[in-house]
Length: 239
Length: 185
Image (cartoon, rainbow over all chains, first blue to last red; front, side, top):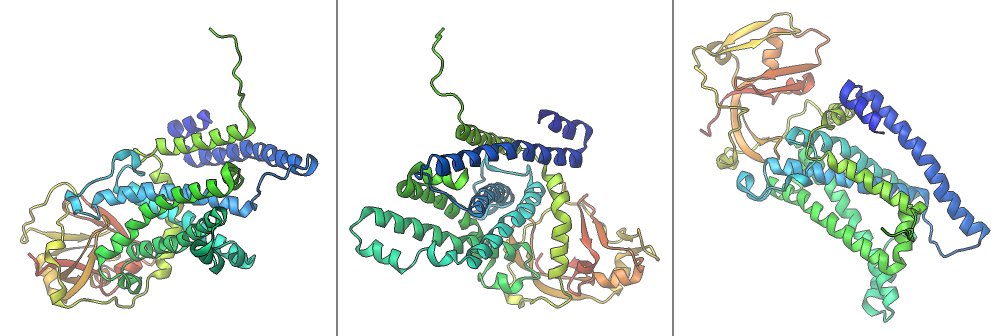
C-alpha cells in the first residue's frame, strides 16, 4: 500500500495508483468479508447460536457510505464556512484546521461538490430500497411508538420507541441539508428553492445547523442503539 | 521483562475495527492539505458540469427593486491587491478561439448598450448581497468577437491576477454582464 502511495506521489501516476488502490482494497477486503460472513454463517447455522442480530447487506452499505460521506461533507463544509463564517462574517469565529478538509476554499469546494453525490445518491437508493421493500411501514416510528413514549411503564419499550423516533427524525434533517445545499449551489437556476428559505442568512444558517444536528444525532443514535441492543446491535450494523 | 504472553490476540472483529479506524485516520491525515482535492475535482467535475448544463436555461432569473439593495453587505474582494486602473489607458482584450480577436477601450465598451440590473450577488465564499450592477451583456461581446463553433468555455483574467472559467451557455445568458458601474460606491 505504501508502494502505491509512493507511485502516486513520486511518479504522478494518480489514475493508475487509484485503480491499484481500488484493486488492493477489493483484494484485501474480499477475504476479510468472506472470513467475517463465513464466521457468522458458521456460528448461526452450524453451531445454532442465534444471539447475534443481523442486518441486510444494503442497510450496512448505507450506514458505511453515509458515515464516510458525512465526514467528507462536514470537513469540506467547515472549510468553506471558514472563508466567511456564517456567524460574524470574516471577523467571526473560525473552525480549527484539524477539522477542515481541502486545504483552502477551492479545495474544500472540490471535496464538497464531489462528496455531495456520494451522500445524496446513497440517501436516494436507500430511500428507494425502503420504499420498494416496504420497510418504511415497520422500521420507522409510528403511532405505537408515540403512544409508548406517553403511557408505557416498560423502560425497554420506551427506549425502543425513542430509538425509532430519533432515527426517523433524522431523515427530514438530511433532506433539508440537501435542499438548502442545492439552494446555495445553484442560487440563480434554483432561485425558487432559495426563495423558500426567506433571506440568504437564514438559508446559510439552516444549512449550517444540519451539521451540529447530525453530530448530536449520531451520538443519540449510538447511545440508544447501545441501550436497545447493546454493542452487538451496533456491530451487526457495521460488520 | 515479562515472559507472560498477552491474553488477547488480534481477533477477526478487532482487526476489522482497526482497519476501519486506520482508514479514517489515513483520510483525516490528508485534511490539513489540499493533496487530493485536485484529483477529487478531476473525477467529479465532468458530472457536476453535466448537472449545471441540465439546470441552466436562458430564462430570466428574478431581479429586485432598488430599495432591496444591501450596500453594506457587499465585500470588496481582490486576489492580491486592488489594482489602480486608469480608464483612459484601459483595454479589454478578447482573443483565443475567436474569428475576430479585439481590444476595446472604455469608450468602445460604453458605446455598447448599457444594461442595469439589481440581483443577488452570491460569492463562492458563501456570502451574498443584493446589489446593482451596470454594464454590457457578455453576449454582446461574444457576438462581436465571433467564437469558433468548438468553443465551450470562456476564460477570464482580471487586472489583480484573478482568473476564472465559465461555460459558454452561462456566459451568453442575457443577465450575464461585464459590469463597469455600480450605484453602490
